[in-house]
Amino acid sequence: MKRNTCSACQFPLNTCVCSYIGPMIENAIDIIVMQHPSEVKVAKNTAKLLSLQLSNVTIYIGENESDFNALRTRCADQRVALLYPNDQAHTLISNNNGTVKLDAIIVLDGTWKKATKLYQLNQWLHALPSFKFDTCHASEYTIRKSKHKYSLSTLEAAAQFLDIADSCDTSALYQLQAGMVKEQMKLMPADVKARY
Ligand SMILES: [Zn+2]
Image (cartoon, rainbow, N blue to C red; front, side, top):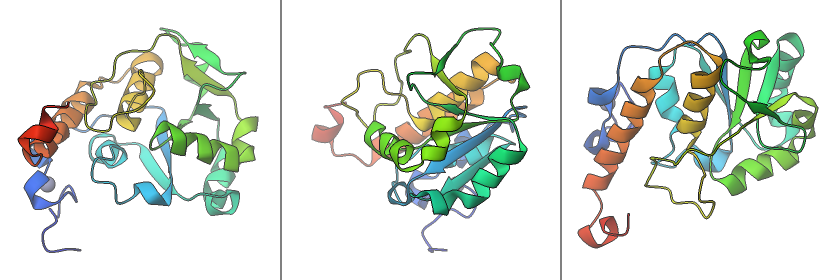
């Protein structure tokens, strides 16, 4: 481990998020994050925040089908669905529609472009039942701007899914993300900050 990294949250010491971590959230439906290797070192990536706040979350890192063999085995043994707005995706509505029977949901991490690439490279994902959100909530995630107006961070996508399909209280997740944004903003020069 690097000397300037917080041993608890793994963020650099100057952007440590430990003071924003709330009580562990006991989510019933596991969150599975598929992460492209290029996202691992991204300072503003929100997937690692999920690990700090959710009791049931696993991050699988890879790009091609063979990288995800362990996850594919898991999908064969469990009831796993994908959170991705493909043509056959079911719309998630409150009080859920079928999601109660799920063991886990897969969230594709990173920018929209990277998530789409992961989806295209992993044909096995296309065979899973899929879900999408009905309305696009405005993202509070201001650091990683996206060309897609309604693009959610990985954390927000997971939290919104749990808000609809799981009975746990996800407010600590949003607070943790807001804390991370606050810490990262401190490091930005004033002229850059003004653009957000
Ligand atoms: Zn820390």
